[in-house]
Length: 284
Length: 279
Image 1 (cartoon, rainbow over the protein chains, first blue to last red):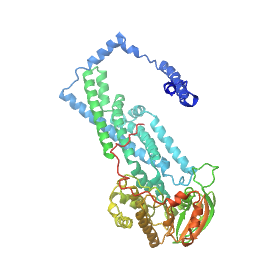
Image 2 (cartoon, each protein chain N blue to C red):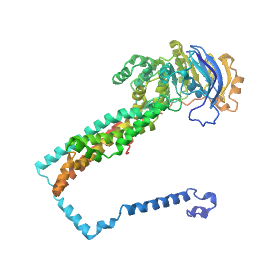
Image 3 (cartoon, chains in turn brown, blue):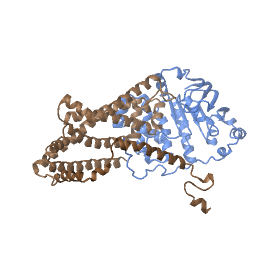
Image 4 (cartoon, each protein chain N blue to C red):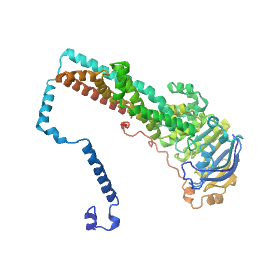
């Protein structure tokens, strides 16, 4: 009795008391390590360079620049305005993204297929749904930074480029994930409505939407939070907002200004996070 | 609605290709306005029969005719229109938890409403009287404005039945309507259901586990292992016939005590925030 309990993983115990998962666990851990090693080489992962004297010195110089943060009234007003612009870019971008995502989701989700009710979906609806899915994948696979660079060329420097970039990438992302949420959720109510003769959109509004509204809203709010962070990054390529100011200040070695903006930005993200968690709790 | 099936066999579309059909070739006719109870041990093919009649399953063999029309020869759009004539009430009430009872009941009106009218009814419910009257039949009029997830299991099941009254269907296919009701509630619910079906002139086909309730229907069909065991007027359904139908499944015949109507079965759980998807 005692020996079976104290036997190690390799086990001296009788065969049926050995953990059958042990071998495969060791195997997959080794595979993961073997695959990871070349990646570390490829990415020149050498964390110790961070602590070499030369690096430490330049880090110190850069950080020292940040202190003290610039807090005169005029500058703070400017930061507040740019902050507001960042939020506005994110929100307008999200609104446009929803305009793209909602119709494409409704087109692509198989949860609303009538022909799939008694078994397999018919060919034509299947092709249409697949095509819409590919369109969504295409939209989201181009990073918003690339879209922003494209739109800065087309519509010039400023927030419009940022709004359009967020709209396209996030439209694709929202459309894809909305589709996944709708298909992974309990389909009993929707299916029953379709089986009893309701139309697709009727079944959506009376079955699918009430079933998944909380998840859909929570994901949308989370994406809005991401859009705020992303619109700050887009500023660096000239798409307006806080990022553009930060880029300017960095180029002019105004560490104090950068520090202020970073602090304000952290507060902004914290606020968005708080708002979204409150909203999610309200939806529970 | 007149139903006639000839040699109809069906299996669930997710079943393995080689698996035997849950419903073996079956031939019956049901006249308009007739009320039929389908009984039999678990796995007898009762639900499969209902799904085949509801055009929710495509038969693997044989023919189905509803009012003389073979639904599977219709286009998808025409078939969907025909489905508006059929009302299938699954055993688990198909009610989204966040929805209000009124909306859930009015959802049965969708097939005869335009999309615009359906959306308008979401803004401010139309046909409140109709929903209230249907719920009153099942003693639920006071739950009209409650959310579905505030109801107990038994109440949800009765809301699912009240839907039938609001639909304009001429064939009601009800799967195990009493599975989570206590005996007195069950008697009342089956009474309301059969009486409403008579008033609406609808044909009613109900699968049942409670044999004593089934004998209140004029006609009883016994299924076993996907095959027709008997199809008789209820007065001819004798104890011997039932014993033969439920042979080796006697516990289902004897243990008719249904799950009691748990009062707070469906009460909302703790306020956990909605899941956040980070993709």
